[in-house]
View: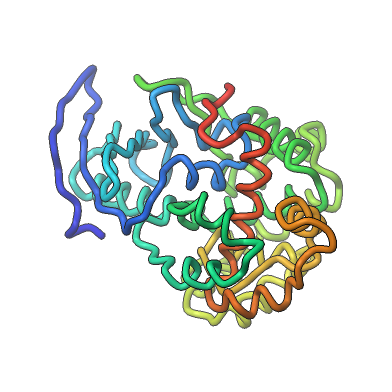
Length: 320
């Protein structure tokens, strides 16, 4: 994506560089829908949406944290403002992360065509046309989200994640806002168990995340290796970690590697959401997944969007 980035301006204020770029997207693209499935609820303090429609997030792994503000001003491009880049190389890397996080280059024509052949899905898919599959900036973040959300409601799991972020991380003061980051794997591993349990993590989930953290730190688990694996092989690798079952491994691949050829089966929210959009009895899920083929994972995001839409969460300004 680096050679496709077009700078449109730059300025410096209070010793920190502010750079603005325009990056292309594969149409149709809707920032509001993509941010909705990425953050889930407006109480998310890591992925935030402002009153003027900017998606705002802190990206780590640089000389200093970089703040990205993203706005969609036309159907085929996003305007990305970066605060804190040290040089052009850091800007290019940050822009790659923004594009990856928002799935800007994903072509979903296969899903769009297939969803049109399912009468119960067609209205929802057409209404949500433009959502892209998001991808967390790090494998660790994907693992944390998958484990925390095991067997919990959106509200309960989001509250736990928010408390954990607040307990382990100091807010970042930027011109745009006061922002929060998900604690990195080293910070999590060093955190006292009592602090994490007080945030709402169960003993089992805490132990699972500790084991995942150990695997990531030691190199036994790494994103590059999973990326080279088929989805079947990647699922098997993830499931070698105690506490990572089929549902959790699938969510890690879906949200961490943007693998659309997987779908979280045996998910109670999926079952209820199918009834919510299609009525009872629910449609044959296996048959639907067969029709949707290699982009079946987009059904997960559409079922989530249906619920978020009913809650009034799509486009809702973040609640700090």
